[in-house]
Image: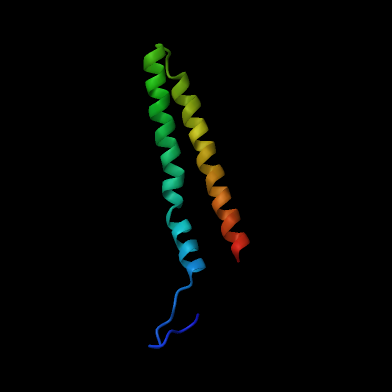
Length: 80
């Protein structure tokens, strides 16, 4: 790391960006699941079906979350 005029170490922008990507990971995994669950539950209630749309949108949220996690890991590893 580089040092500024006062002798303190500077944290580069890329390192901060990588840290924020890692900190955002739990939200990236949980948010699509929650959105998928509530949207599927609302759609099941609106259409009068059982829990079929809840399961479908929960699965879509699961795959969307892990896809986004994969994209974050891929982008983070390419930056190195």
